[in-house]
Length: 263
Image (cartoon, rainbow, N blue to C red; front, side, top):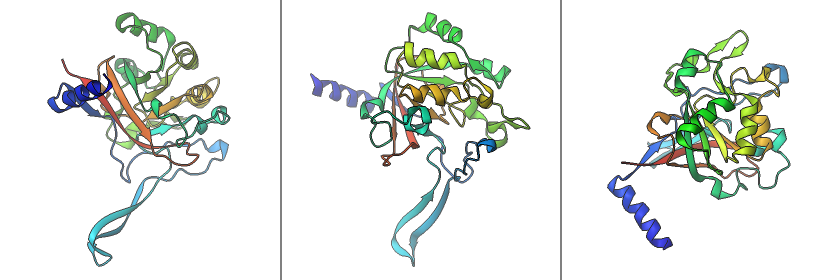
């Protein structure tokens, strides 16, 4: 039975009955990096950079390769529980020790495009999710919850980060929503189109940075800087999201793919 299941999956991929959607932004030196609150004295997350070692030249006539440099949480990236102090004491909480069955799970997509367009500081509430569930069914345990805002369509870094004198203004989660998803729905984690999983003004919420604080505090994960969520159905897709296997890694850039059944 198991081999037949895999044979059907392969056949459906080959024939196009299942489509693969890339949810990953391209990494290059212009990729925006999460702005860190200066009041905490945090260090700098390196922007992505590439240094060519050789490219069919005197340094290596038959091969092309590069040195790469960036912070773990750059571009489309995976946040492991160990990323936040609330998740530091769990077992198997880093990119090299997380159970691999968390990397291939169902996904639901909650559309808040209109709300985010009307209010860049929009916070998704439990009420908003319950309304979505009344139309699409209850979020299944062990799912990724993907927060669609079409924020990834903002081409310039200025518009994408949406910085003002008081910091960034981007949509996120009401703190109670994170508790609801982690505890009552038992999700694997949440994914967003913005540069980080929390709202731009999350430092002013209680608790501050609620997605990081409570999602990782529940031994859950995060995905940030996703794109192409408009190509996914509300339910029925399967997400493949695996971080690099970095020892004690708090996260890493990831190639995030979705398997989407075609009618």
